[in-house]
Image 1 (cartoon, rainbow, N blue to C red):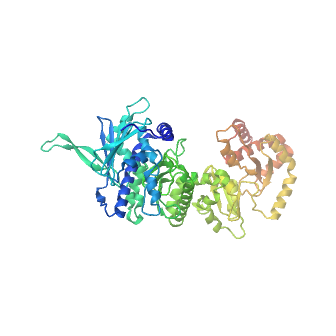
Image 2: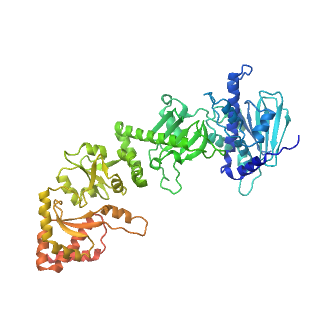
Image 3: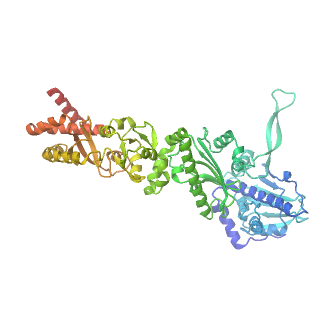
Length: 628
């Protein structure tokens, strides 16, 4: 029989497919196994609807053989097979899929479960083969036929002697080139790995002959090769089993094996959703941050399956960035795949599934927070920073989704608390959530400004992470309560009478403060007395949106532009140092300038800020000590 030409558009598409559409050549095996699985599905379905067809379901299988010497991979199935016409139609015209036609013809039947929506999957064989032979005998035909092609030149179809119903595909593997080592596909272990990676959950057994070393009978150290036929795939996905019937150890071993973690997960989320788009999801919260989480090449995402066949190893669209540490998979029969099956044709299904998954993760975390506080605190200590970044990223677009999951250290509870818990304990008529920032909890607790707020009996949130204050700035308020930094100038702890009295005192000392400001070269925006310091002499207070802590964080970033917070040097009006300052202003203005430099340096040290002129300050301190 003469060579038949592919249709012009099919010829061009075949060439494109071989050279560009598929980025990952190893998926050829996934495609051919999926086609074989479809053929078995069709035979099973036909046996249910046609009493003339009898099938022993236990015998349905896929067999893979490797002939290294002849550079061949053979994939056999005992499914429904193809007639001469079907070989022509399904393999002669690219994108004419028998599976899709079968699905459309039976789309009202709920038990049809077929993934091969596009005939082009078969043509992925040409990425690794220079000749493909398909021998097939249909359940509807006495005569078997052979389809053969060496690529875009065309194909032949002719009768052959195949006796059993089913299909055998023989791939003649290309010779190695400098760029590609095709011979790796002729190794047993490589094919077994590809089966486990992409087709582990095909519902039919995928069998191979596996060679084992076995001790010879009657000998001590002599071994012989024994060939045994083994089922390579596990067939039943753990995520399709009933949750009540899956043991914790099974979930954990699946996680450590599939996601290459040496520690069991902190939490397992297993859900099955029926509706507009049905899917099964198996999600894991790791017990530690992935070691490469902050590496440039880290990829978030869930494995994406369609009816047990791996479609994408990292589908990033299924997870928001702030849940990027979640590992797991989604398996859905409702995905519309495009011709390469590596990308999705439409993302509407994905968006719906992704939204559901996001809500599921959030509700599971809220339940953990409510019912298993110890585990939640472990989770938050590990992944809290990611939630905080998620809160202020994208201009705070996701803040309302995450604000109830955030925790901060409490000055009164001496542990992590939520914003909701803080608000529930607020004093009557208290409209402000107070917080203080610093490098560590201990350092914050020693801040001069913190003492005064403690003295008034208010609870404070201690923000020690660099991201914390940015989160507070984005949130702005929680349940109608505004946030206030106790180290900012707008902290409101005094009565109107106290404020009025302080205002008068500051006005009287204006000239002295101007001189002091000049002494430190205008490093601060103002100098003034305050009543908010209990026993401490001085502090630095920020004015405006940019706090001193935020200045430190931003300036530590690798950028050329530096920012400066508007700062005020505040002096405790009730501290003995004040009388000394007044006396120096009257009698020794030069010495007042020296005192001012020391006080400003002291205030910077308390805030954890560097001193620009440490030698000068050290000499001034020594001078003061020697004088007294």
